[in-house]
Image (cartoon, rainbow, N blue to C red; front, top):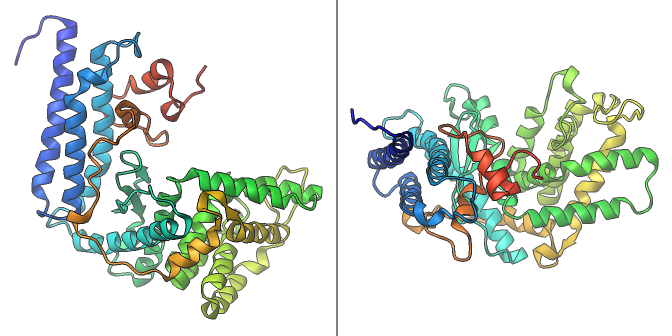
Length: 418
């Protein structure tokens, strides 16, 4: 083993080894994939990205911008960021290597994700005049891998789907679990255009306040407006997946009785979510909606008298009282013209997406997302996109310190910046 005498020399050599080992691992898996495949395209793009970043660390390091951060620590953090992103993509790669029992099934699931994503992306482009959405469709991962934007808005999302989606021995589980994909593909789109959701929340909140709501309605509105992002994804999933999606959602949302009224801050109560899907389906395909309406009412109606758990104990509201306010919000989301959509409504976009048909693209037609983006700071593109929910593996000790104390970017700092 090479003998190094000085601490800084040892650390610098370790960083160099980590960098070279990362690039070596990427090259190994690129070579193991079918030539010209979609997944090989994405690995090649990551290799381009990582090679470019790691070869330009000297120019990326700004001693004035990072006055209290030495070069070696900075380089270690950048290697860690890239390693963390590669580990996520690598898991997706492993499921697509020839010989993996799920490789062919994942091609089918990727096709579902691409179909949903592209139909919505093209409808937003044609109706809402939104031109800059990523043209890299999501990749599906079998298992509980959280959604993660690999590298700003240009790389593909990773969509985790339950193991039931590949269970050839259980048709019910397979069909049910695959219907999560349209919702997640819609999420991948709307996370790129927060201005649409921000305007929707403002407009819906303004209209819910006219005429002035009573105290109970006002309390309900304060909760359901925080669900808006998930409501939009539910509506888009229904528009893209149709009756099968709406039926599966009603089944997935069937929770044990003790959990019927419970939820978190951003997701609608499971008992009430199927009413969102049923309402949207009626707008998309009225001839198929009656059967879904009947199914939702049969599963849910007897529990609507239960207390809505998301409000303080001092305000006792039933879920029967919440339902009409929720449906009113859904209607406002559907009908409100938005400046962010060229004065068209989301309902117009979703209607167009529900009718659209696409053909799958070959790898050669996909976007080269590993290249630089004009007008964007390379360092911000990399560090400023760290997923705050999913901690990075590897030598991550300095990343949060860099984000919060040196660069001071709220986007990658998990504590309040002072």
